[in-house]
Length: 155
Length: 182
Image: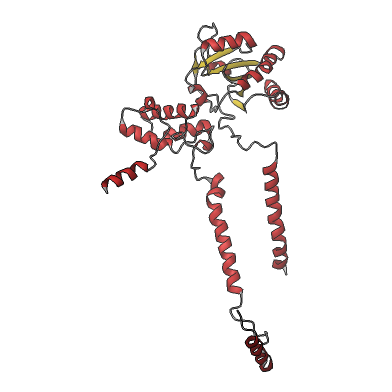
């Protein structure tokens, strides 16, 4: 049982970044911070890939830059600001919340709200019982309906 | 009555807005991968580069950009094919139109860069060698070639990504150079 479990564990996909051995910092805590930060920074020449997982040349340069700045004592915030000043918000995989991006962040919720309200209004307005004006069957009609159903029962 | 009319106009309005959006999206001139530069109208970043090894050039740093009028800053590399395509344009621009062009040689082997300049001509007033790509990061460059217009005060005024086509030179770059030179 333990052996099977071990084999299954081997099959688990491991998070494999593109970080190369020569980039890794000696300080494991700092390296861990660099890895986390790198996951939030876009490789600017790739399609929606972080610099942590991209092996493009510029991604490597940015990874080294992130590590250099962390080693120099920058906070995570400062590293991000440094990159945003040069590459714009585009360099962050998660766009910041600011007036320019409100439509992006709150748009879907607002559309859902409008849709929900419209649905609610529609359902509330719909009469629950058939309108009083709808004529019901007369007795003769009812009798004929029953004979028709009896003659040709539903299959 | 009024709300009823609104109810009829609303779908039309939504259709028009969506239609305009799709029209914009289908515009073949629009480049969806273009990223607006964060550096436009900002001072050129701090950097200091030594010349290409084995040349007698003076190297390039931030101070060289604000001292001699409007400058074209061109990132290039000998291994970059599109750079080869735009190079004759730069040579012509510097020789015939007297535009001051400085080059940043991006991650290149010095001997290859020297050979390239000998072979294709050297339009650059100064060249800095960016061996580790740090200066390129300072400029927010994503790849070569890239070209910036820097005004006489050392502020970045325009960014062009990729090789310069003759019609882009004529329609986008030269008018801006002329306007800034006056």
